[in-house]
Length: 249
Image (cartoon, rainbow, N blue to C red; front, top):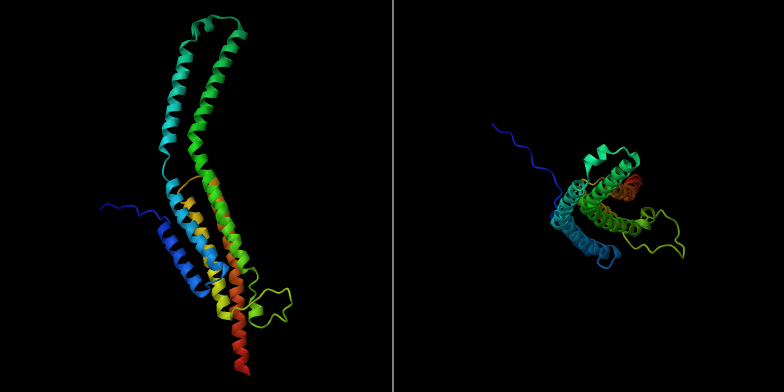
């Protein structure tokens, strides 16, 4: 009996984008004229672009690889040509240590130059992809901070009547308890999906710099999401206390 390896677990970009689109519909239906609905719409566009770019970056740059192979061949031919013009027997017979060291030094410098150019070409593809991914991750990081700004002034204690008297500079709060809970939940979902979009890049590369940047972004969204869930828990706890107090009276 032949045992086959289980298929590799890879995030499906199509499902992530579909979840984003569904979330946009939910936010738009619940808060049709809100800034969060507009932000979610922009995130859907970015999600589609991320799915396409992550898939494209997973493919090899055949042109660069062909150019790298050509550079390697040219460097090898160049070294062979240089070596063929050196009179090695004369160098061995020479008693002039200075001349020998100069000849060897020139040969070593040419080798270093050739291999330096070869290394540049071989790592060019990775560096180009890394720059594109880091730029995309910076955009996703900006989305995470904007989501956090949207929930920043959503105070559950005020909605539940425990925040005292509002001042002239207090934010306008018109949400009900249920609406605030849903709003915060939408923010939490958006942060989670931002992290999943970032993970699409990490799933398609072994670049340690990219993986570290994705992990940092996931930590950021996790920490921001934890603040939101603390507010949701406050709503739940205050609501339970209010219900309990009503039963007692």
